[in-house]
Image (cartoon, rainbow, N blue to C red; front, side, top):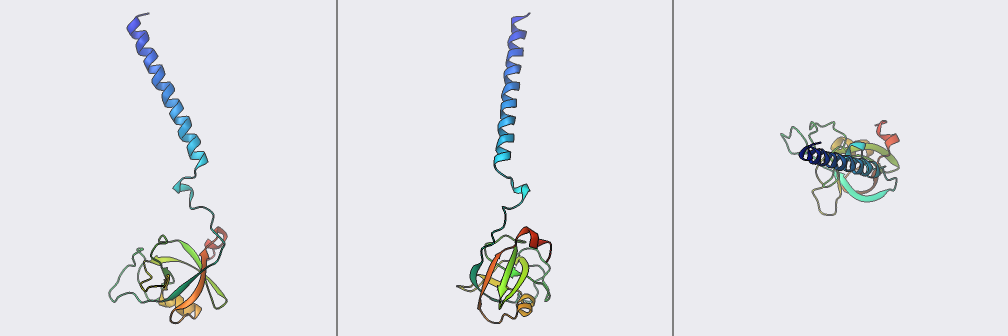
Length: 144
């Protein structure tokens, strides 16, 4: 066999072996650490306390900061940090309601959530009030 050809085949075999090792490492890493495509981690069931109040979108607003169609009937909450579309359960006055983050907000100091007028009316919240909230559990997400 030609020494140059043998050296080339040996180099190609080394590259192939390196590619296999890299693939095994990547597959193992993917199994150990869930990707964003597998969804968020299981929802926490712990209730959190916060101040919340109703807010009104500025006149002429067509979409919320989360891309939702702005309307008088939209049921949702605005939060400055939680991701758009995150499902949350709001508890006020012994009522639990499943809703989602539809906008960016809470515009007032000390206030963590802004409720759309329709949601505030549904649960009877007027002014700034303490509420409880938690992330929805997967079993609740399909029921809202």
